[in-house]
Every structure is written in C-alpha cells, then in structure tokens.
Length: 301
Image (cartoon, rainbow, N blue to C red; front, top):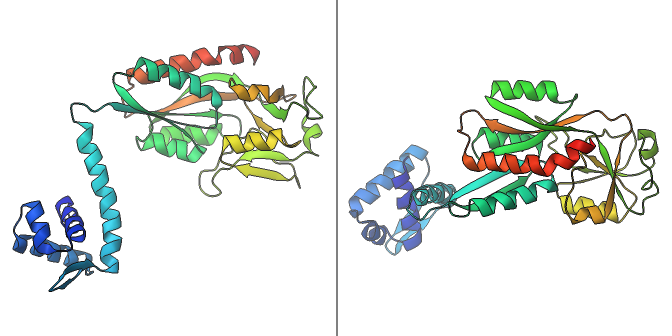
C-alpha cells in the first residue's frame, strides 16, 4: 500500500467512476484499475462495487477511506509546511495552570512574524509526557514530589527526556471567598475531611499521576473534571475545596482564596523537553517569560 493508492481510492469515491478519476489524476484507466486491484488483494477486502453506471464504496471501502483521508490530510499539511508563506507553530502541554497564559501571549507577540499558531494543551501527566516524547509538543510543564519523583525520573531517563526545575512550591488549598475556612492563615488536613473535594481527572490505567497535590480521604465525596472552568465553578458555588500549587494570576483570584496547607511537602514545578529536539529561540524566550511570572510565587514559597 502506498500514498498514491490512497489518492486513487479518494478520487474514485469522489467521482463515482474509475474513468473520471483517471482523467482527474492524469493516469490511464487500466493503470488505475490495476493499482486498486493490487490494493484490494493486499488488504484482502473489496473496496468498490463496479457496475455499468460507475463505482461505489463497499463498507470496507468506506472504512478504508476514513483512515486514508487522515493520512492524506497529514501529507497535505506536511507539504504546506514548506511553502514560502508558511508560519511555524508552538505547542505547550501542561497541567491546568492559568499562569501560563501571560507568557504565551508574550511570545506570541514577540514571534508574530514567524509563528502563527500557539497551542496550550491542558491535560494529564501521561499525555504531557507522550506529547513531548512524540514531538507533538515543544515542551511540557508538570511537577515532581516525593510520590512521583522516582518513577518520573526513571521515565525521563528511559525515554531521553530532561526535566528542568522552575521552583519549589507548597500545597495551597483553593476555597471560595465565603468558605467557612477562608479566613484562616493555614489549613490542616483534618479540617478538610468534612468538605467535598474537587480534582482534575487523570487516566485510570497505565502511567497514572494525580495533578492534585492531596490524597483522597476515606469516604470523602469527590467531584472530577478535566476542565479548569468547571472546577472553579464548583468551588465558587459550594464549600468544596481543591488543592494545587496555588500559582494563580488571572481574574480567578477575585473569586477564590489560596491558603497554604500546614506542614505541606514541596512540589518541584518544571518543564520537560525531548533531548532529540533542538531547543528553539521561542522555547528559550517562553521559559524566560515563565520564570518572570513565577518570581512572586517563588518568593512566597
């Protein structure tokens, strides 16, 4: 099977005719028919039903075309990548941190002549690592602590990734401003047992590391979401709480309070890069902007 055969299937399906597809593709009909027959024999399925009125896809042909169109679409994108007017893209995968928006806006302005697309993907630990490993993201941002450090450092070594620290931060508890505990300077774990918890959803199988910095007490009710906005809405509309590094610099600070957890361990926030990928100027500038935005939090922690 090759890309040209995928093009042939797409053209025949679109025109409904072998002869019309051959004209559009500038090939002879016998060569087109022969190529499709070879493809069908290789796959062991019939892709088209031929008749005097034309050709139509079988169920197997329709299924094949769905996958083929994805491949052809990626090939078209790859060709566009090297056109003269093409602009680059920058992709960041991260846990759900709102402080990344300002550095991203900063580099978008600095590199607007060469970059058009800027992606901030808030996702799970597993997907962050896979995205960096597979060159889908320029870098990933997550944290290490005593619970995950050993396994993650082994993963970095195994897959030739590098983790670079950005700073150490304690656990902070996220509460609505009218919460019964909102006036406290410190919160103890025992004070949280009677309140519902809100957490970001992670994978339930395979590499599984919570983004949240607290465990789940026995018999505690828990809300899960993979959307930061939903979690903040639950917090603001109830006496539930969430936990995290407490690095917040958006309008959310007007709606919630961030209170340090007593005797909290430190969490090392950092970025993950693929050693097989050369560090670009935009990556360097982005990291510099992130460090600048973290200064006040580093000093508080």
